[in-house]
Length: 337
Ligand SMILES: [Zn+2]
Image (tube, rainbow, N blue to C red; front, side, top):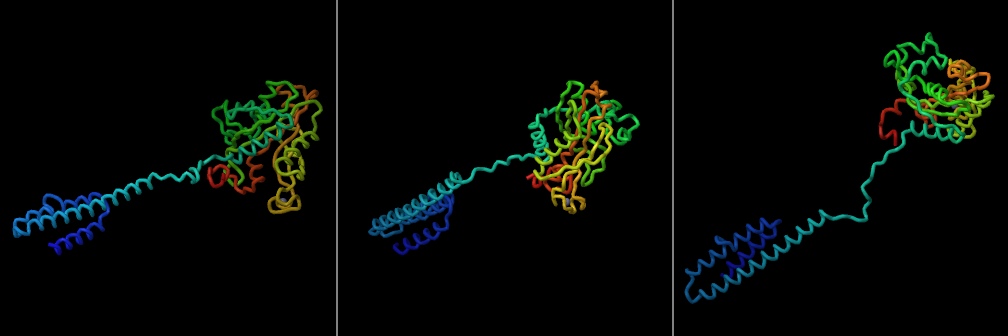
């Protein structure tokens, strides 16, 4: 019996070490202590034992039963403990860990340049006004001294919604709407989307953003215009920047100018960015054409004005060294970041 007992315990220990969960343990427990288990079989066997040895045999079986139950109970505790630990690990929270990262937005370069442009001019006393993206041809062209025969008015060159409505080709229509509502002196800036039927390439887009300024007062001259643009360019690009006005033609100004700033890359010495000229064209400007003033009922003998239109994309590209305008509209989060 002793030998038998040792063998049973050994086998049980072997089985127990491989067990990983309660279900497996239940099976082993049934195999040893169940109704059809090893212990029951041993007890039934008592009838075949010599009567004088039966008491001894019964005690042996009972002590074996106790030992088996101890081993199984110990294992039950062990499994319960490890399962509890597993559960705790699952629910474990590291209170010292970094919080979940919030993805926060970032100001788009177009919006940044627009906001900074507004800041520069509102600090000079200009007021921000808003215009319409869908304009009537009279506000977009006629009132701005751009008669019917002007090529810019061609149906093929502009996005017409119908004969009486088009997507504005510049923010200058805001000038007209402002002058029709307010008497001089006027100092306003406006910005927003404008549309042209341009082929899309590295420096052109069918939709782009303009920043427009209008100043109407007595005795306004080109000196005022140059000073405003110098302040703008220096605040935007750096205090040592120079501004150059080159005569140019826009129907709504007289005289009109293309406005250059000294090259941001080379400081004016000449490089590939400025095509060795030392200057970079940034905007168009001029003194408001007397016909435009007459169109809104102002007397050009009494009032003069200056106006300028700045391409926001152009400024953003120069300021942040972007060579392809399309990057600004691709919405690639890596670029925006
Ligand atoms: Zn240069």
